[in-house]
Image (cartoon, rainbow, N blue to C red; front, side, top):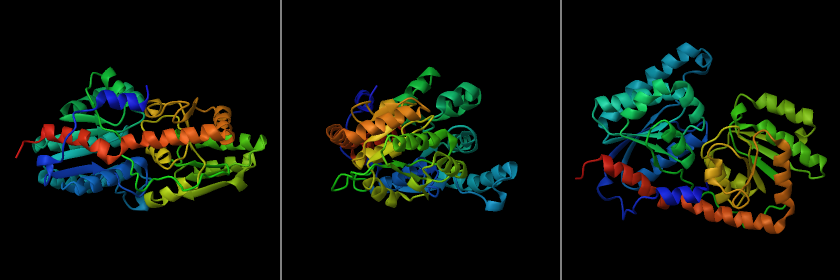
Length: 376
């Protein structure tokens, strides 16, 4: 199912404005950059957008890490994170009219989502649990008995995609779709097409995101006579292994590791890119795909998780099987050498990205808020 179909099915009645929401206080609980991951960027962007609509936002950061020398000591690290997070959370929830929680899977859910929902319930504040984990199916299968009480205690569960909505429905949890937001003023196309084969991966350097597949695809392109350059924008524990793989494949001179790139600089990086790669092994609704489409950069992605709900294969992106570097290389070669097809996909992606602007998404989110807040 394409992203367009899901949005059409889930669209609420349009709202004429913020109405009684102006001046309301929101406790926004979630990660912030750095590091500049998709969820952290969405939290920061949401805070700015809500403030622009006249709401008072207090952000409670969930990734405020302890000193570096303690980060590898698991028990101590978790205790310090909780000690810093919980007092700030309690005070912010106490001051808020509504709590908006950005939730992820695994330990993050238990460490941040569960106490947020419990404190909100204790203080009598409505809480929106905005779940965004691409590994929800596996997480729920293994741990739903511990997750269910938190989900059911939330006043509303919001997800960004039809993919997650179907997973939650399989566990008898009702959800409302509120998609991710892309800033078209910041992510916009270059004045001229990039002709050279410059590829971009914009994901954290973790095994989950399959960046080794992109490296192998790049090497295959070189063997076919396409001197592709690959920029990898992100940081993470797999960096040294990926650098080693690039050397092993003989393409290290064509691969650039940028480290973390802040959201402002990413717009320029997309505009210097011909094709964006998303080689993930699990995913939900990657903001990097939205940013690429909004920047006029066609995408080659794995057919995984929520990606087929976000793009239409052959129209707004090309999809390949997980861990299939040959299929990814074939898709890149097809896009790079078919000028007319490249332009058609570029235009289709630009049009699709307009469905994820704040102007389109705000009505959905404010409908959720308004249903939980008393009028007046």
